[in-house]
Length: 334
Image (cartoon, rainbow, N blue to C red; front, side, top):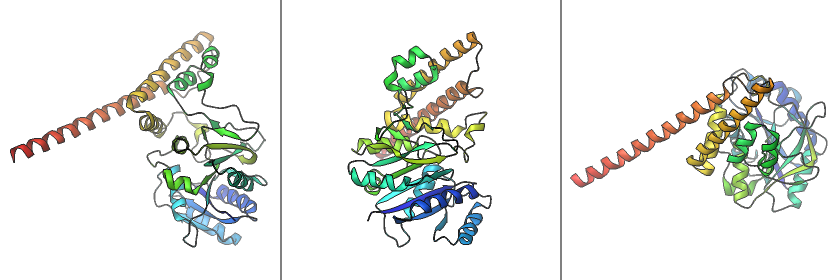
């Protein structure tokens, strides 16, 4: 039987994490696997609370301390690298958010799907809220066109660029998608061995996008599995629902994704497209006297961030060229 290592990443939500683990334990009773909790250096007593909670419930579960908060990808990588308790490697890694609770049969369904479809690299669940409301978690890869469409938010533009809209309609059955949100995702171990783990340059956001893109380029598609259902509260650790200002790490991740996967010129054009669409949206809502729908100063923040990133790049290349010239001059003088 295939072996599964389930990783639940905690950041300052110990009680909720224990609830997610309890739901996962229930679903893994008939499976060959283990669960490991990784506290992502919460610094608020979470690690101690998790250790005490596991001991109180009598669970045979490891609680690990990452030692640093490197973000979502780094925390999950820490759990992946820990492997099974006997030092072996599993066949599959299953990552589960601390605010996600597997419904009946959900983990088993993902395993069965990957066992049946040997050419699929990753499989993710249908995600819904506590009130059974559907969460959109299946997406296309971002592009210049999607940046313009997503910021313009204008019907004719969306219809014209329909094939580039990032959020996909919620699939009614299992199907391939570009990427999935990592609230409930099972990953084939051999794929991670081939393409590597999460890129830890991403602190938060775009890390699943990048991982799924690397898998797809290596010939391992990601599939959305509708029959696997997971209840998700959402944005508890990040506080995204209460953002008054988009944090710097979101802009860092966005910029890194485009530069890494498409080059700096593409990243610049993607930002230009986003700014252009944003100006169109603002003009329209001003005329219609509607709510903007963005945190205050979002476009200014985006522009300032990416200009700084370009200046850092220019300075870095200037220094590298200068050092190369100095080394050449020294060599000739010698």
